Image (cartoon, rainbow, N blue to C red; front, side):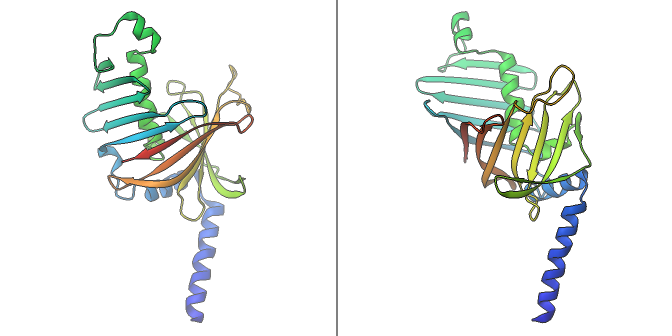
Amino acid sequence: MKLLTILVVSLFSFQCVIAQNISGSLLLEKAIQYHDPNNQWNTFNSEFDIVMEMPNSLKRISHVTINLPKEYFKVKATKDTVITEYTVDKEKCVISLNGSSEISKEDLELHNLSCDRATMYKNYYTYLYGLPMKLKDEGTNISETVKRKTFKGKEYLVLKATYDEAVGSDVWYFYFNPETFAMEIYQFFKTDENGELNPDSGEYIMLSETETIQQIKIPKIRAWYYNKDDAYLATDILKQ
């Protein structure tokens, strides 16, 4: 029993040392190992539903299909009586409204439908639901300095990511559990014309529970808040 106690204490101490001295690249590797232990992301081919709940608004249910090997993406969103559908198949874009791809100019403008928006949705869903693996993408710059930070009463290891100009100008922070290396929060801020971070901009997203899809642990619930005043925005719920 005494030997077992010594081993447990030693292991815990070793984990604490790792957490205190870990580099950004090593933290990212450990986080990816937690979320995608079998390296499945690059061959991801699956579909799932996302239910978005917002204050004073009807639910939006989105059925998302992502097939990375075939460069195929589709999202079908239903809100009240309106059904929009975006498909991006390699470079080809198809849009439909309430089941029809014959859409008037007025309806395109009314519902803000465009191929640029289709690409935006593809990038949005692939990025958020591919984290933290997407932080290995070209154009992502990971800080080697990892900070310990207490947020909402809990301590995290925080990884900072910036992006090449061609990719984006926002500054992102990713909060990982120091024991399991699970991603539990991410946060982004806008920058001004001088590249300086605006602390009153952007949002933070609290992650809870997980769904395992194609052997990848993906956060199930994402609650969005403004950085400026902690005002609640919405909650996304992942359902298979």
